Length: 215
Image 1 (spheres, rainbow, N blue to C red):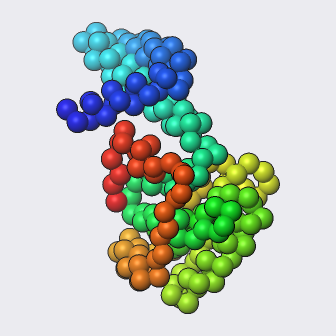
Image 2: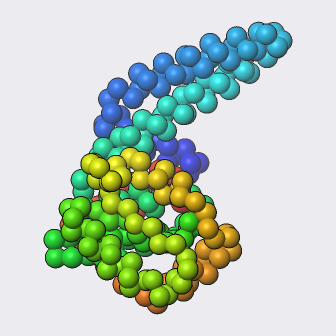
């Protein structure tokens, strides 16, 4: 029941943020029904209805997820803490600590620990954020030893990572640690953590109420 309530809440938000979503979802469901029915007909008359329903529902859910994600990115893009909100949706062995560094202009650095090592993600004015990232990288370098430290800056432009592609960029980094070593590295960095509040920003947990985070 909780999952259905979450889906209903996401659907209400999606209709507000993306009025065209319903049409695309219905179109996807219809296409899925037709495709599944055709495949079922080739297999057996008894398979037409189950295959049509299965592919119809699957197609609708895929489009629903794509439109919901796109709407969410559009709603939070440009807001303080948007990158942290997106990072905290990643599934698997990822430890995300928002706002480990911040300057007077409210540029932020978030820390992600995963199989690629440490990923420092900055958001704000690119030139200022790069300096902030360099400081945080230097501060962590002794603690992590030979573990790679990657730095990314969120934004639109050359050498920047668009918010919508941030998760993909982080998860595609080459794995250097074993899964059991990820938690060990996070524990090693905990004493160095100086997580700061995100003043006037968004609630990073608000955008992930639609689906639980797993580690």
